Amino acid sequence: MADTRKRTYRTFTHHEAVLRVCCDKFDIVTAEIVRQRRILEEYIAHDPEFKTTLEPIDLRADAPEIARRMAWAARRAGVGPMAAVAGAMAQIAAEAALAAGAQEAIVDNGGDIYLKAVEPVLVTLGTGTAKLANRLAFSVQPHETPISICSSSGKMGHSMSLGQCDLATIVAKDAALADAAATQAANLVKTVDDVDAALEHILGIEGVDGVMLVKDDRVGLAGHLPQLVRTDR
Image 1 (cartoon, rainbow, N blue to C red):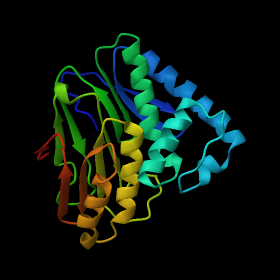
Image 2 (cartoon, helix red, strand yellow; image 1 turned 135 degrees about the vertical axis):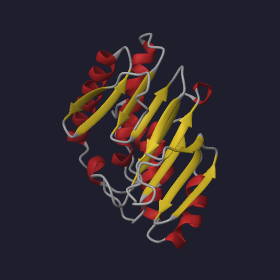
Image 3 (spheres, helix red, strand yellow; image 1 turned 45 degrees about the vertical axis):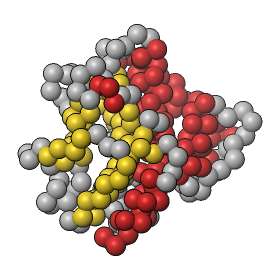
Image 4 (cartoon, one colour; image 1 turned 120 degrees about the vertical axis):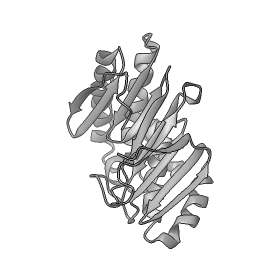
């Protein structure tokens, strides 16, 4: 969840997606979410496997950009394309607002965040664990943006996970890739003994800049991440 200090966030709900948006082009962000959702649903109607497969898939020749972004990310991460949908939607909507002249765009799509900022942003990381819940955050500086920070969990949320990771958070420039890689990272962690191997595997995915994994009382970090701080709240 992005920091609310000095910023105004608005909530937008569309079907099952609940987004928090900070952008002076809010209407453009929300309109793009609706438009891209319609485009994706129209594509899935002709290619239903795209929605159900848990593995990378070849696309039809008429696949739209949103599906191509998702499929590309899924292939790199080794998961199904729907694992990338929230991140892909967040980025493509933010990019529409930026293209329309917005100086700053922060789109949080259920914990999958794409942001371009002109002032520092504090992104809190809800681990769901008693000791660490809501006490960790990334302090993101403007020069680090645009950036995506996407998370998955085997214990929280509605997304499917094959693991038992408390929190898998990926940092990358591409939000579809960060989202897909977060899903794969969470799949790989069933016990604390899996953390090191999962860090190495996910960091080996081209385009992934950094990884944070939380399992019980173990926090594993790898690659280049924004500054990790404690919120102690």
